[in-house]
Length: 286
Image (cartoon, rainbow, N blue to C red; front, top):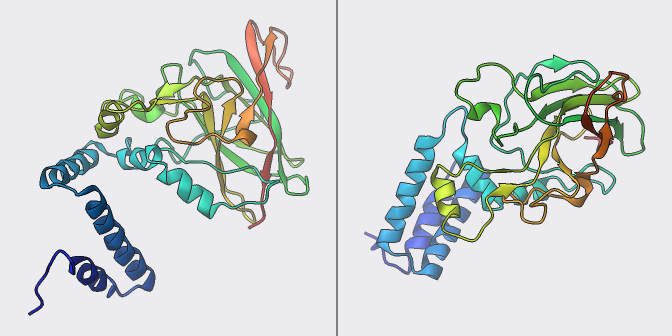
């Protein structure tokens, strides 16, 4: 019989998990045990604190569903999501940098044509984003599909509207043979992460800003190239220096040129104020 003590429990547990049949699982789980035990020792974790953490995890799971990924949000605000992205996306400096996926992506967005409006009747200042999808040498990547999604003027995504049962502020745009694309939407606004759940409860006990700067998401998954998950942020937006999920990169900050009336770059007439932005997405070969 081997007696378990405070001194040997870590080695015993790590060795037990090292018997996992898959070598990578064995590596991950035994390392997780060692780091968790080291954390508990460092902070002298009490039983009451341990139980509070267990209950917090329970609530995080209970509030999560197909429309709300509270565990992804947890990873985001702890900086773990961006750390994993940066470790796994060490791209060529010429390539568009990657950032977090976030908890609000939905598969199966509708396909729209060049310059078609994905905002429909959502209020906001019209935004016309156009540019090219190219490789590291500037050659066009024709046929690249840009999966785009964003929050509305209330700072909410489609999945946060229980009454919405159709696509809202999301679409897929296909680049032309010369790599050019055009997206029409409304200028996104900064917003707060959901504060009505366990993550928000924890954030509210700190001086951490719960806000994200104005942005929209773009996902490109093109055969022959590294998949790219990224954001585009508005130049001068609030919270660029304090993004709660650490997602801002200088190369992803875009200037919005203001216009008054006239026509969009594709020739569509427009009344009132609107913004124009240009950006080229640079993909790295797989």
